[in-house]
Amino acid sequence: MSKAVRCLFGTDGVRDVANRGTMTPEMALRLGRAFVFCLTEAGSPRPSVVVGRDTRRSGPMLEAALVAGLTSAGAEVTLVDVLPTPGVSFAVGKIGAAGGAVISASHNPAEYNGIKFLDGQGGKLSDAQELAIEETLGDALLDDWRPTGGSVGSVVRDGAVADAYLDRLAEFSGIVKEAFVVDCAHGAASALVPRLFERLGSSAHLIGASPDGLNINEGVGVMHMESLSTAVRTRRAPFGIAYDGDADRVLFCDGQGRLLDGDIMLWVLARWMARRGDLGRGVVATVMSNMALEERLGEAGIPLVRCPVGDRYVLEAMRENTMGLGGEQSGHVILGPWVGTGDGLLTGLAFLRACRELNEEIDSLVDRFGRYPQLLRNIAVSDKKNVLQSVALREALASAEARLGEWGRIFVRASGTEPLVRVLVEAKDALLMEELVEEVSSAISEWRPSKE
Image (cartoon, rainbow, N blue to C red; front, side, top):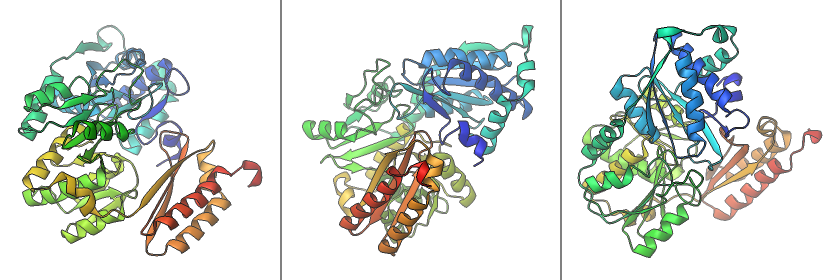
């Protein structure tokens, strides 16, 4: 990825505290103009663009600015209001739009917001496409390029897209009768999930389904699985499902309240898709996925390819290796035969269907998966780039890798959306794992520019 892209675009679009920094109405307007300029330059004159958002209070403010920018550059905009990111992706394909935009900060707290753009297939933009947008922001032509009269863009609102998306989900899943728990994270899934499971004949109990603009992801959703776990155990439900703010991620817990993460979902879905003939040449996972996933898939004769963190890199690796399934431990899963982006609602339904058709007992999955002990630590930093290049960190990593040998691994990376460095250590020896996390984390947190 180029340095220019990293200045503005993270792993999931442009994101910041809303009304500050890089996520102001002024920036949203300019990003909208730049996006249309790039679409036009790529051969889509007067492009159509679908725009959706999550439930944050800042959403309508940024939507107004973004739409002003899009129409100022001549785009035909279709508003779908509050809709999960995969729903916007679906709408791009259904309408035949040239692209899409989602106003969301996904799993981040309510004070954050962001804009992520989609291509004409409803997928995330490539690094090169995001770089083109960023370079266009500083191009004098962008300020001079102002259509007038009938060439100014238009805006329409499409309330039927949500129903069409629900129809697609319901058609895929079949009947779901279990009385389970669903956590909507007070996000974009809140309005759709009750209607979805009503269609499927389920008496699902909802939590995190009362958004007020300020409570998205607050103590609920995939970032706070303890809420779902408690609800499942209290209600003695067979399992629970949790989404994030824009519902492109999904995680489960079993009837004992234990986490079923993306690795376990990939393990089950891979075997189901292989049986159906939909898997292609194997599975893509990121460097964060547990080593047990490779073992379990290997036992089933299913190859695994690893890629960098980020669902766009998962999708790229899937296409390069002709693999039908890919995903992240965090719950981003891409079901290649059906979608080109992470869809938490679809993935959740597919996982339940796979469990039924494989006769899997959900409560047995955690024990049978046999996860290597794994510990992830997030360290707040002021300068991600220089911390990662520091001598102290390099020495700490070399020591840790020597002690792990072939019985584990260590991975350090900067967050693409927050001022954090993430340290992941995985080892069969849990005590050694904890020691190494502390040593490497200390090398990061104690770093000071003056000492370099």
